[in-house]
Length: 325
Image (cartoon, rainbow, N blue to C red):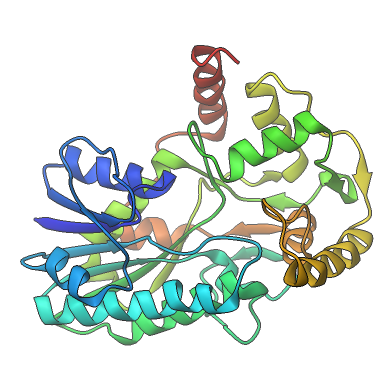
């Protein structure tokens, strides 16, 4: 079918678009920069541009909406414009175009209120309890998307958790860069148990949600490898794959949370050039358990991950060897 993928110039969006092309679908991508996905047709622009979105969706049967403002800091209005208003624009255009399947790519952070999430499923999205502008606006966007679920446009929300792999400039490269500079601490020893998702698995899970929309619509699903590990062990594996010494020093979580709150206040007054080194949300993510029951996801989406964490780390190491370090 004809499928529109938003945000395909990003790490995960590009992988999803490539997977759909490989499956034989006609893929259009909508984002500000070229997707560089062979076989896909790029439509360049913003998901907030209603006329452009309408053109991109003309004749489409499926939509995978990944485009979002992803950051630990920034103008709250920018998060709302892209994550909430952009999603509304996509949904409105999809309904007018007669799109029958709509996959909203969300985040487990929409149900995170600061405490551990251990062995739970896709808890309800909660904008009022979500931490930070990104999580709050993604929660609103997910609820908005699911409210449009109907017999004519089946909507599924999926929440990939901590997606990583070769070419990832967000999580993977930031871990490696900060470890190399000696500015990546372990919080409370890095013992918090977390799920993560190798990029190929995240992409195949999202494509499975599109395929299974008839059966899974109206629901949200967390997608992970289903292999919880201590966060310190996962970061060490990523660092070693790149030939970088893993983080060794530990900071109490309470101290990191207090520092994160102070940095957030300072960043709001005078933003830095990069992401803030710590925020309260990040401190909570690094020090609390986040692992999820995958039984509903695997049953309803008829899907299972194909690349283990250990295999993913081997692929990551091969990537850095081929890149010369």
